[in-house]
Length: 214
Image (cartoon, rainbow, N blue to C red):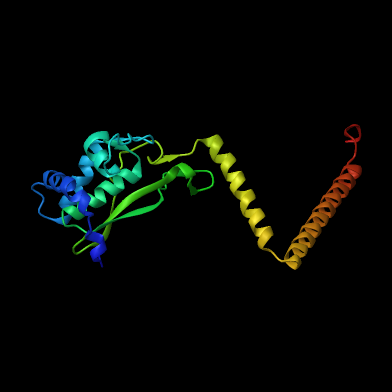
């Protein structure tokens, strides 16, 4: 359940966040409606950028982002939504991690890259508990897509090699020796079967009469 920390707003931000939260959540009567309204304003009226505009005067980054800069990366959007939700009386918190957006169709697994690092919001909705909201506008890095065929094959090979290397690193000496012995036996058996087949084919060929005698 939410704690008092999940609705705390620094005093220096209240004078700025108050009017914005009231305006954006105007007409919303439920926690979910307020959250959707705040999320929508941030996603449509602000711009995603890895080079946010820095404040020229002494003011909090969040205030500058909401009033002047209006562009920033995911941490700006998540922080803004969490603080505005709290100002509107909805418990909220910022969550950091990775957003899974890329799928490898060859290996059948999802790929998470460094560029997929992301921040979003969890907010408390009565009767539902903590729910996820993402106020960051859609970007190439977080839109769902499949890896191209060539890159998918390359990545699948690299992933298989990594798994093999990890398995070898975790295996004991006896397990490694056992695997090598099994591989040697399998190779010897394959060579023996191949040689036996070759001898059988040679004998069949020798017993067949030439065409001129048939």
